[in-house]
Image (cartoon, rainbow, N blue to C red; front, side):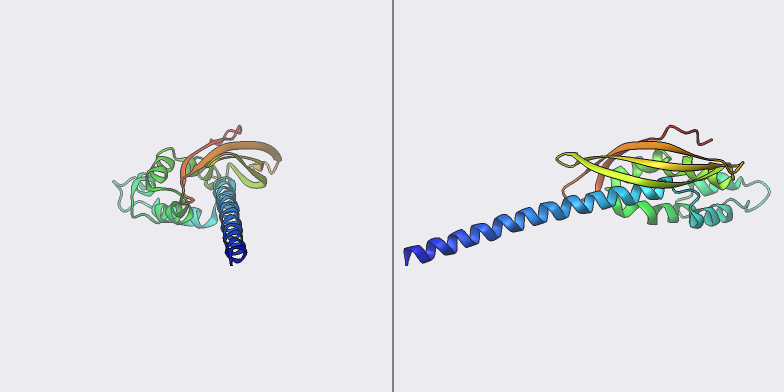
Length: 178
């Protein structure tokens, strides 16, 4: 009877260890996928849905209204709804507000909307640096208004909370976006 209980206990401990390892790997994979999705959405420009919404939002309501201000600042604008749908599910509320306040998405999309250039992200590599912190690198193929394409290197960092939401994000992309 003692050996039987010991075998059951070992089996239980083994199942617990496997479950813990599987959950940790699943969480890491989810965070890596989240980081890849956010990077791809930022650097692939222009976002066609955003471009259409922005152009619609930018139409002056009357002769005294500046459309661009409405598009960028109105919480209920179509442009903001697109950004919210693209990014908010991946961020904690405070990190999302910080992301929006830094205008990360706008600075790449706006020049693309103005047809100064377009870009496509390639070769995204996400690596766990420690605990809930990840780094990423990527290649961004940038095509200018003369239809010349160059490849730029992008990089940055993500930090996640225990639920898998981004709590901190920064990015470094060397090309001029204006």
